Length: 550
Image (cartoon, one colour):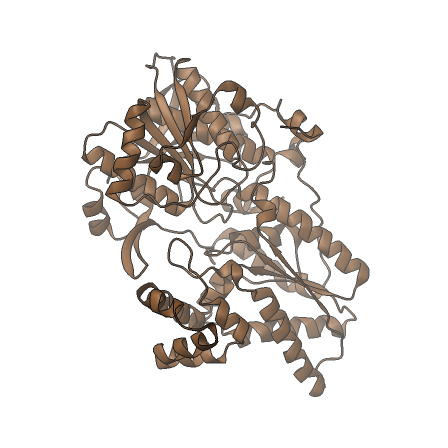
């Protein structure tokens, strides 16, 4: 491949590792664990992998490990740092035994099922160190959930002499990894399965997984562009920019970008739900701030909107839940109906309350709510143009306020959606180090014969040498949720905690940011230079662990 000047320079960057795992290690086991909820149901579904202890690696004299063949899978959407997870895994396996081999299954879990793979050698790995994307082997969204899939995968695993599979993915992918680990242990296949926590959305986190990889880089990419927009906004002084950000199930990205850039308005989905806000409440909240700024001569501003906002408005959430169940059961019949009649078909088949709400929606939004579901049976909220919906509704509300003499400004809008722009960026130094450590830790979990674990690296606001590496049982993070109309075991998503330090800091400052122009311009990610510029973690992590962003 042709390399840019940055890629050439970044290839020589050596990611930092926790001191405790640089040489030999020993495992320290914690107490037996239980799932975060629905303990009886989860224990019944995972009798062979439930209740295992949390693990921590400590430094010890180096020991010999047998050579081992390992498979690796990139699953789900891309996130910055995936290549470094694979690099860390490769280097860790080779450090344990130079004759160990790593095989990459192509285009996600489907590569395991369809027996499509390539061996990852040092020459290949070296071309991808510290780079963004998942293009070394590609990714995919095939769900590993049936016995036929597991058995098909086992055929190629046995053929290649693979003893462990590492699945790099988000909450659903790691749930599938745990199901696979349980099945292979149940049948005595002798195959370990280890997960690594990936998602830019930041909703795969708990006391043992402080952050999912890629979140740091993606938020810095988005914050750079938001800062650029805010500088343009403050220069032209004539537009309100409505900016939708990725994050369908939680508002971590929106909150982190707000902490980095200090916009005039940032909506937090979890707060909207907690306050039982309606769509009109949200529109009025924005319109009141627009009017108040206009009264001071500021006919411009920025509004950050989480991708999944519409699902957190209680009335809309109930409507979408019923739509998901209805389309899961009647999707084939719905698809046969003329598009011109689909709206009326839905209205006739919903409960009275939800039918009324659905009928009141603009036709474009109503249509977007019935588009094809994602692989997990959920509405694809990224296809719903929430930013335009809010901008247009705020415009109508301001027109009413102007007629009533309560608004004297001008309102012009610009719309943006930042999503794919952040998923494959070159990882920040934090993500480069964190991902490499996750991969290296995964190799140690493999070497120590563990299965059903997720690689864990903690203490991440400290220098990398002080990070704590180990493993957390995937069953510890699980609960039961409704998917495709049925209750399924899944890793519980981590939402923004309204009593947490990051949200509290935001809430304490948002009124000032709303009325005054307090924009911060973070600029592009820095890879070379002072530690305080290049290696800083997210504001979210700093507030969660240190209580301060100074």
